[in-house]
Image 1 (cartoon, rainbow, N blue to C red):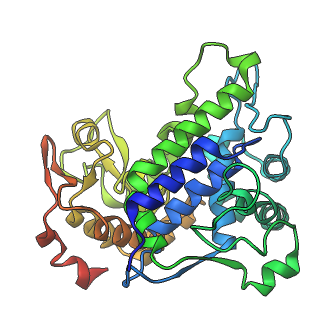
Image 2 (image 1 turned 30 degrees about the horizontal axis):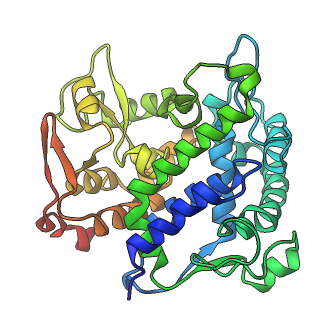
Length: 360
């Protein structure tokens, strides 16, 4: 049977309220696990699901990559994310950044940095993965002191930075039966809660420089943390300078929209990006679009999207969009608002999945 959502939700809330945190790493790992759960939803809701530790490490590194950028370009202040001001993950990413010649982290997603400096990325990745297994993954399910019950995955073998232990366990952790499906269902509610806790922790760790402002939530998690100028140009050049949703010609004002909302799955790859008019982009906001829009975005073709992404040294992430689409729509209740067009939102209807099963 699938894991009870209420019970698992209460356990996750306990992690937020009672877990010991000296850095934001636990929160980053949980957010990454939630995204991976959405993209890994099994056909059998009660199945165990393996999570590749390399994939998990990539997601954690990606979250911190743009957070390395200064809060203010004027004073070059970088926010601390641990109480002692240090951290293996940040240190590894700083070293990686030094191997990438870019004027701004907003101009280069970490997937592009991986292409630009593959050896440096590999070194950073190994350090981060071993650190995740030693600390946040080992401590994530622990609330208070003493022994604890594992409710997400078995962490008995974790707690040390052992390459052999990681290999002996297949370079993966395994979500218990039913946990992946339930995490995917809870993700729209739980992910924002973990991000809010992350913002609160960072504010407390940087009281000396933040005082009563500014709003750091947008700095840490806002969609503007990555510049989408290059994707906008290649999309217009290849598919035309029209709104993907209403076909209006875009003149002086055009937006780049995440078809699957960035707040839901955080996919900046070209497969998830389209040009939109201000009206459609504002109206759609963070609401899930009708499945037909996602299908049409994918119908542009993986070969085409991959090639265009390669031209601008940008991630494609076509497979992630496919996987996330399946996870998002298959776990939504019938009452979920679905965006059909400007000022047109209605509850999800299962009839929307008629073509979905064939295409995806």
